[in-house]
Length: 61
Image (cartoon, rainbow, N blue to C red):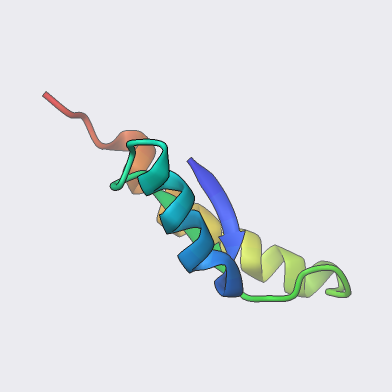
């Protein structure tokens, strides 16, 4: 599982595919994060968490 910002979505998909993991899951958050204040980072973390939890809790048979 990885967390990336929007502009890097395609790059992440390509790297996953090149490594034989075309369905590798990752969470997307808004870009940029470098200058975000605490409130903005908290909001982005909550967005990422909402994407990550189902992947972590999903049981594959």
